[in-house]
Image 1 (cartoon, rainbow, N blue to C red):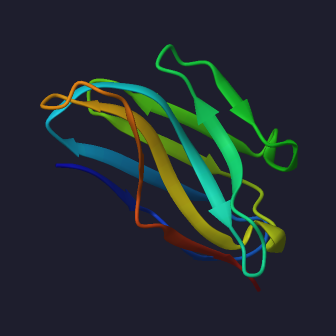
Image 2: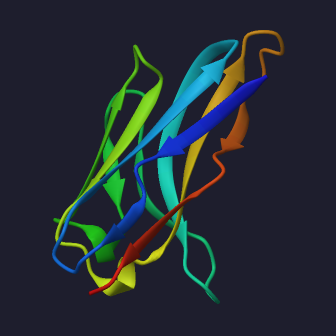
Length: 121
């Protein structure tokens, strides 16, 4: 079994910072792209940031210059550093990863359980 576990969400004031972390665990052969999505109430889930296994990152226009995605391939983790947070960043944030389990040897897309980020004064 492969699992993604997120941590680091919470309540923060506008202009503040939060750091989200996501760790993949289980019998993993390889991990390709990893990323963060978010879903606000009444809205569709959207890509926030993604990062390839080689470290190339891409961002939604709404978070460019404020959010930074990074990964530690040795620890199977992906991080999202969020600075200058705005109320419109409020959403449930989901970790996503393309993982090949060791016992199946086919690539699947896995999701974390989600972590709430609330930006409010």
